[in-house]
Image (cartoon, rainbow, N blue to C red; front, side, top):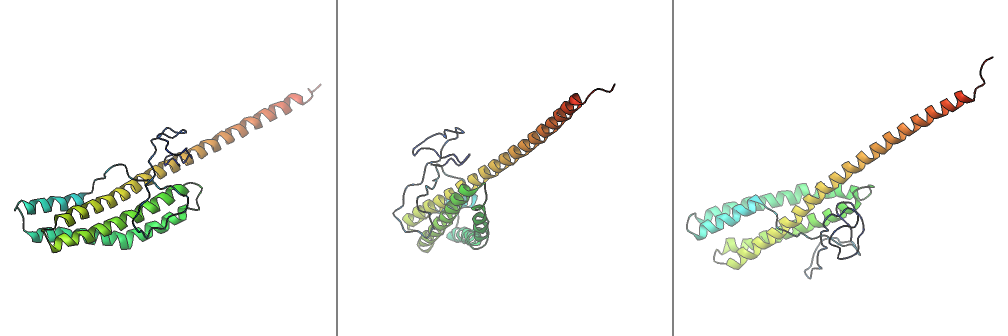
Length: 215
């Protein structure tokens, strides 16, 4: 069970990393639903442990509540829905493929292999869930009396947001880890240079001490 902060391999079920003491993000449970996600055999994938905020999702939940209270017309609900659909489709068709290609390059890097694997899974699953949620919400748009479509759709979209939110956290952790590793290497290089300089001075002093004194 890999720590997402330092990459240390811990025993299954570990709550805190035995190397850096970071809280371990528990592996995602196996899903019984069909998925187009390309998972790697024998790999544990992390799972969100909290809900992440999403402004446009909150806006949609708010406008549906205001519609239920008679404060706005249903056309406003449709407008917000179409905006959300465009946002998700834009990310899914443009930003996501570019970022997944970049993550694929990380798989060959010394640092970032595990982060690449986890983020690829989370982002792919996240956008898949959001797409499914948008489709379920279409049932509510077509029939405002269908509260089940509204609730199920919002839950699916929130699940997708959670996957993407965790991927963003892993990205920040990877950047931090990379920065720490670069700093460590820089310090090691400086220490090696200092050691070489001291060794050189020491060698010169020893040679000087071995030279015979002039008569």
